[in-house]
Each structure stands twice: as C-alpha cells, then as structure tokens.
Length: 165
Image (cartoon, rainbow, N blue to C red; front, side):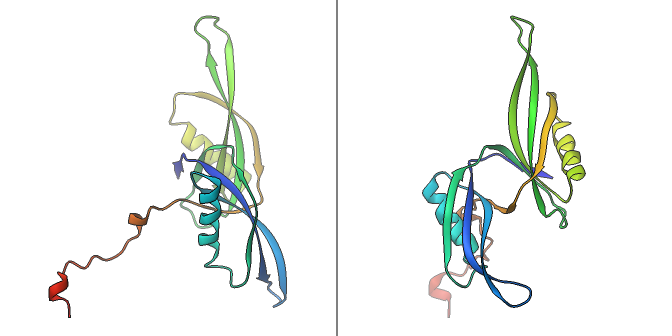
C-alpha cells in the first residue's frame, strides 16, 4: 500500500468500445489523472487512453477532484476505487473544544471491507485521531499518475556516437 498526494482531476471520456459479443457501443467512463492544470489533465487522459482506444476519443468533462491523497494497492485483484471521507479530531488548546475537519481520500481495493482495512492500515501509523464517516464505491475505471519524461526506464547507450556502427 502506497499513498500519493497531488493535484487530481476527474475526467470523463467517450469512445467506441467493442463489447464482449463483438458489437460496438459508445461508452462514457471516468478516470482520475494527476496534473497541474485542466489543460494538462486533458492532455494526460488523451495520452493514457490513446493506447486503449482505436477510434475517436472525446474528453467530455474535466473537474478538479477533492481527494487529499490516493491510496494505491499493490494487489492485482484490488480493481475498484472507493471514496473515503475521514474526520480528523483535534482539540483546540485555547478553548479546549473538540474540532473536526473533513478530508476525502481515494482508496484502491477489492471490497468495502478491504478499503476500510487499508485506511486503518495507513492511518494507524499516524498519531491523529480520526473517524471514517463515509466510504462509497465510485464509478472510476482507473487512476493515472504523472510520470516525468525522465521517469521512463530506457536502457542507456553509453557508447559514444563516433564509436556506434
């Protein structure tokens, strides 16, 4: 389980999908991308989806996501995304009153129970008191993280150009 804090955008794309029975159908799917702006989010989702789509791809919507952080699972069968609303409990030192603040997370898991377990696993390592006040399955298909151009694992050719033949 790893987590990542970033600026996330929810995107909706429409494209022609070949169904299991061989028929063609226009589908609308939601994805989350890591980007700094709406323009970058649109570019990122087009780049990511162009590998999977052979026909026309239309970005039908982009909105800034409210997730403070996303918890990614390393287990292959964790194929669903859950929106978790956590309430952090702090005590105001001056007034000695309890203060609650809400934060929304996105959790990758197979089931609701496993998503709750992952939240407890990650948040249990912190010293913050919290309550899980909401946990709902989303319609998100996938989350795409930003990868800088230097992140790609390419084999370096250490032979100088004048020696290459």
